[in-house]
Image 1 (cartoon, one colour):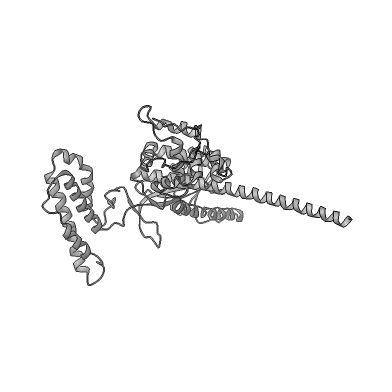
Image 2: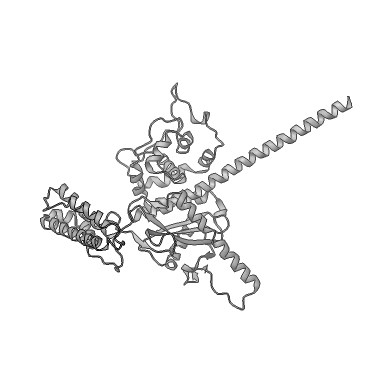
Length: 449
C-alpha cells in the first residue's frame, strides 16, 4: 500500500518550517521545484499493492535514492547524513526539520526490487527531460565499459576454500555431521600455497593447491550423500555452482568466478593497468555537444560491442522521445553501418575520392567521440559505478541506469549553481555601476560649490 506524505502538517510550538531557515535559491531547492513530483508519484504507485501496511512515501524513497547516486553514498550513509542536512530533507519532501532516520537502509533493497529496470529507466528519463530540447541532438556518442562487481580477485585456491566453507556452513545449518571440517588444515594449506611463483616455493605451493581442491571435492560428496530428498531440492542450485567450480578447467568458457555472484564475467578491455576485469559490460550513450547521458544499459555474457547498438538506440529513442540520425562509435563496434535508419560512423581508412571537407568533418567527429571517455570516468568514480554492490543481473541494470541518472542530475545542479553565481555577479556589477554614478555625482556637486 502506498504511504502518504503530509504536505500540510500541523506545526507544534517547537517546529519551524524548513522554508524559514534554508536558502530557497540553493541548487537542490531549485532542482526540487523543477521536478514534477506529483507525476512521479502517479508513475510509481503502480508498483505498490492496494492492501497492506502503508509504505514509506514514494517521494521520500525516490528523493533519497537520487541523492545517493548524486553524492556517491551507500544505503547506510545516505540515511545517516539525511538527518544532518535540511536541504536533503527539503528535496525529499519534508516540511519541518526531522531528527529521526527516515527509514531503515534495507528499504532501499525492497524498493529497487519493486521498481526494477523499468522504474530505473523512468528516473533516467526524468533526468533527461530536465534539459528539454538539449537532450534531443541528432548525433550521439556510444561506448562501453566494464562495471566491476564487488568480489575478490578470483583464484583457484580462494574459490575452493569458499566451497569448503560453504559446505561446512550448510552442514551446520542442517545439523549434518561431516567426517571432518578441515578448518585447521585449510588454514595451513592457504599459507603453503602463497607465493607459488617463487622457484623455491613452487613445488610445495602446487601440492597445497591440489590438496585444497581434493578436500573441497571430498566435502561436497560427503554432504550430498547425507542429504534427504527435501534438502537436496533446497540446495540444488548452490550445489550446481559448487560442482561447476570443482570441474572447471583453465581454458573453459563461462567459468564461475564467485559463489554469491555466479553471473560475473571476465572481461579484457586491453588496459595496461588492469589486464582482466570481473563484472559486466555496460554501455553508455551521450549527446555529442551537451554530454547528457541519454542511454545506459548493462549487458549479460559480455556480448560483442557491435551487437549491442540496436538495444542502445531503442532505449535512447524511448528516453528522449526522438531518434538520433548519427551514432559515433570506436573501432570496437565495427560491422553494421546502418541500424533502423541511424547511420553508424566509426574510424576507418579514408577513401581517396573524399574531399578535404569530408575528411575534416570525419576527424572532427572522431575527436568529439573521445569526449565520452571522461563522462564514463565521472559516472564510474562519482556516481557509484566503479564498484557494483547490488546483487545479480538486475543489480547490474539498476546500478548502471541510476549512475547515469546521478550524472545528469549533478550536471543540472552545477548548471543551476552557475546561474545563481552569474546572477549574483550581475547584481554586484550593477551595484558597482550605481555607486560609481553616485560618487561621480557627489564630486560634480563639490566642484560646482
